[in-house]
Amino acid sequence: MNQRSFGLGLLFLMVLVWSGCDSGEYGKETKTEPKEESMPMPAAETPSMVETPQAAGALMASAGAAGATENDEGVNHFQQGHWDVAKEHFMKAIAANADLAEAHYNLALAMDKLGMHPEATTHFKKALELAPADPKIAESQILQAHVGG
Image (cartoon, rainbow, N blue to C red; front, side):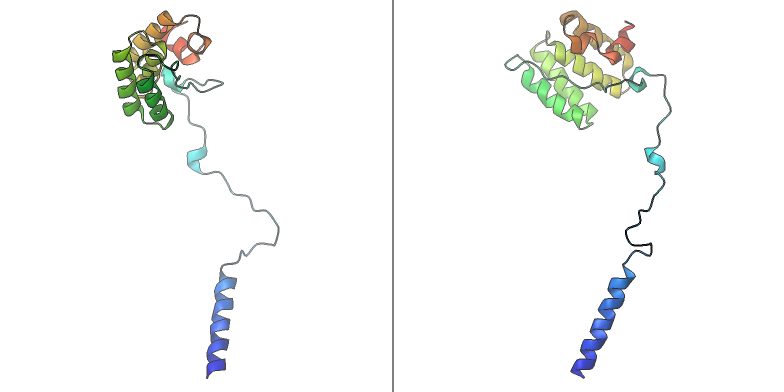
C-alpha cells in the first residue's frame, strides 16, 4: 500500500508539472501584440499635452534657499504624479520665499497637470521674470507653450 501511495503521488506530481509547461516549441520565442493601453495617445490642444523631446521636470531649489525644503518635497511628489500634494508644497515654498523661481516654475507645472492653465501661465511668467538666465526655465518648452515665446 505504501509503494502504491508513493507511485500515485509521484504520478500526480508529474501531471501537475506537465500541465504547467508551455505547449510551444522549446526555445522558440513567442510574440505578443501590444496591449491597447500602450498605444500612443492622440495629441490634445492643451499645453500639457504638447509633444516635447524631453519631458518637463520639476526643479530642485538651491540648497539653503528659503523655501527649498518645501520645494524639494514638492518635487518628490511631482515625480510620483501626486500633482495636488506637489502643488501644496510649492505654494508653501512660495509663501516662505516669493522670489524662489524654481517654486514658481514647479507650481506652474503642477497646475498645468491639474488643468489649471491660466494659473500655470501666471507662475511660468513669474519664474521667467525671476530667472531669465536660467536655461532650465527660460528654454522650457512647456513654459514657452504657456507664455507664447
